Image 1 (cartoon, rainbow, N blue to C red):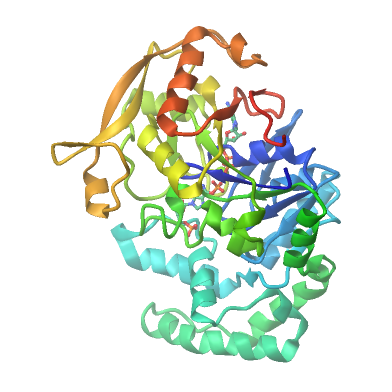
Image 2 (tube, rainbow, N blue to C red):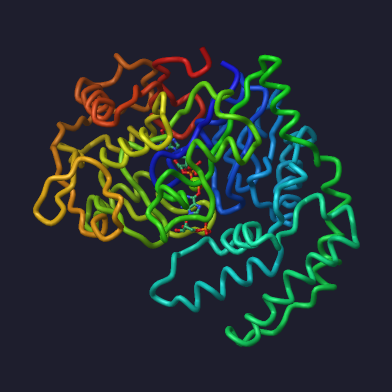
Length: 428
Ligand code: GDP
Ligand code: IMO
Ligand code: MG
């Protein structure tokens, strides 16, 4: 089983960090392929809790090489502070590899992210304010700065000047902001260069060789399917491709090399930021899911919007990612409800719709059609096998599996590494 992708099947925060960490012990490389420090991945190891934003969750597994692929956007200040935070806690980070082709988030990208959101007013996306969108925009506009540029002062200076020439006009004339001094930016970036140099590598070559040698490579998505810039709820999305195809472009590995694609799926639904969310709850059930599930953003500290499980979205994730398996997380959070509603289809303008509509207008009008499944009250957090789950919890999982279109191969019953029921091995 040389290469597998692990990604979010909903709007992010499904528990990808925990799932990656769980496999980390048996994996040779864990690779981030898109996004940046907009991610917030929580990993609980024993009594230690780690919040990772930019680094792959595999960094906590000693035998595993963590890789930041070319498709990631890297804030060098965040990279260095996350590394030193882990070093202080005794984590060895020396194996990290960073693609020389990854783009850099600079202070002007974070500034543009924040002022754009302010300018949009009530139409804002609710971004994490980490400069993600503006950095990807510069990449596509061919005025981005790459990690490798840190090692050629002349090129770096020319590129920063070129990028700021245009941006300063906008900042000053449109947003009424002071222009940014390109020399200061260059100085700041050069100040990071030597500290990052030991990690910089041709990650595409290393990863392809590793797969050819039979090593196990895990591609860890940030965000989720519905936040994908192509397949998500545009424009309320992030600016990269968290879906499975993003692993190929964001790491330089061909689709023929990938054997398995695992969708991380929460047993209910959450979303942070603006945008449509058909099963969102505004009542005491939503509040209970938020409280019991600890649904507060790891990156921004914002409360997550909460709602019931949406099988239309799960089916869509199966389709656009070619999922081979699901990892169902946070089943324990649903303990105690007498009945659990599950959205099986939408009603749009009086018609029943089984598949996610491609039209934004239709999706905004989608009303969930619910089926009620019987709940359970027994504590499931100690369950180690599927048969140890209460009958109704088993039936809930089976119903979700049938509706979602791929086998559920693992179930999370708590945040800890060992609070997991493994049904089929992901690595066989
Ligand atoms: P990610 O962004 O997909 O890595 O997910 P986050 O870390 O942002 O959010 C998931 C939260 O749920 C974290 O606080 C995890 O520790 C926690 N978590 C993950 N799996 C489970 C589970 O099965 N049960 C419970 N109760 N918590 C879980
Ligand atoms: P993880 O990896 C949940 C959301 C933001 C906003 C939109 C665009 O922890 O699942 P951006 O800063 O990316 O331009 O914001 O995407 N968002 C996430 N929501 N989990 C995440 O990451 C997210 N990363 C970005 O809230 O709505
Ligand atoms: Mg998260």
